[in-house]
Length: 201
Ligand code: VGL
Ligand code: ZN
Image (cartoon, rainbow, N blue to C red):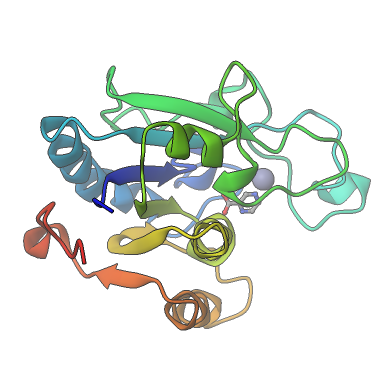
């Protein structure tokens, strides 16, 4: 079957960037490379999805309610908005996750569009078989998205220059990359080596 690619941009939101409530070191550094990937996918008329962490005020995901995280990406707040330099324009569809009061929902495959359609169904509906994944954070949402992508049978390419991690424990992000590779994901090291014929095989 023909390979059709889609770009999945994970959680490039203010709260995960410097100044945010769950800031990832250099989290905003993913924006420039992602904009270049967006340009390529848009030019090739390939689908682009941007996920957002979209939490209610009260959720067991947050420390105050039994979770591990500070309050972040609460629906409708500045922290939940996409980084303003990310050039999503009209090309990208937004999918949201993390709305449940009792689940973490790290994976983009937990996300739904405004009509409630899940990402896997959106991808299948357009014949996508290969996903390119970048964004935040390497050791949580990016990792879970890549692993679920493999589980759902997609060919997965990790955009190595367009990810940054939380690293609650030192080395978490490096270990996450190893885990993704072990699951059969492939890697594009940087936008310079990237063409949309990559690797398509
Ligand atoms: C994330 C921690 C908590 C992520 C979301 O987007 O990787 N990490 N919520
Ligand atoms: Zn979250």
